Image (cartoon, rainbow, N blue to C red; front, side, top):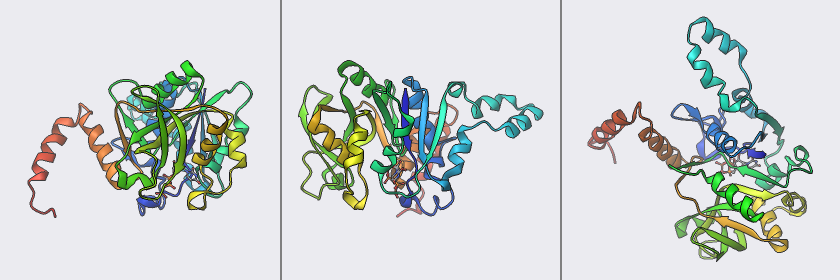
Length: 293
Ligand code: UTP
């Protein structure tokens, strides 16, 4: 019923664009990045979105709250068809909660701040890192995890294969294979040194974690990069209960990096029936331009 979206990070890989605009508000075609993750959560039945945000990111809050002045202007200009775009029906009964992370002390610290907004009825919580955009023709990534959680009652996190030389940027699991797509996590390590990774299966930005995770988040110290790491709390959770990992059918784009952001934009452009033909033609002609290195 509840999803946590940590959006307080500094977005340094995307400076200078993120100097005054949160990276989560950068558009992929005509929607801010963060909205894709919010829609993915609402689609599995989540009714409360808890953003862990920072005072410098007020535009995220504005984006998910009603804007009566803009609605009025659109109505006066007979452009009422746009009102559905700024007030999607899907958001009608959704509660948006905004929690301030004063200091960026890491993902583990950010997630712990959501604890006060959960109650005894919440057995598990979804966590989505909006930088990671998933596209598929079938089930969403979070739906895949939700189905596994409902069947097994085990925490489950999304993983994907990453080339060896890039593994040191991710949390990496030591897997025990259960089926073609599902693994039990034997061990997990945040940002392993080159050559030390226990597999090439890296944690990607979707989790369904049992609320026991908060007890572990309270007890971890700082880890990789001097930050409180969610991976370290998951490592502790594994010592007391089974945690699963699942691969996902579809494509994942790391929109916190320049190349991932551009690839996601191109990919969604190709799926947009209004513009795909034009973009394909432009790409063909652009590729024959001799200005490139
Ligand atoms: P990242 O490390 O990918 O995001 O954190 P970042 O820090 O914004 O990006 P760079 O590396 O500086 O370019 C993963 C997720 O955790 C959130 C980020 O907003 C992102 O969604 N996060 C990270 C927080 O909310 N608080 C933190 O203290 C750290």
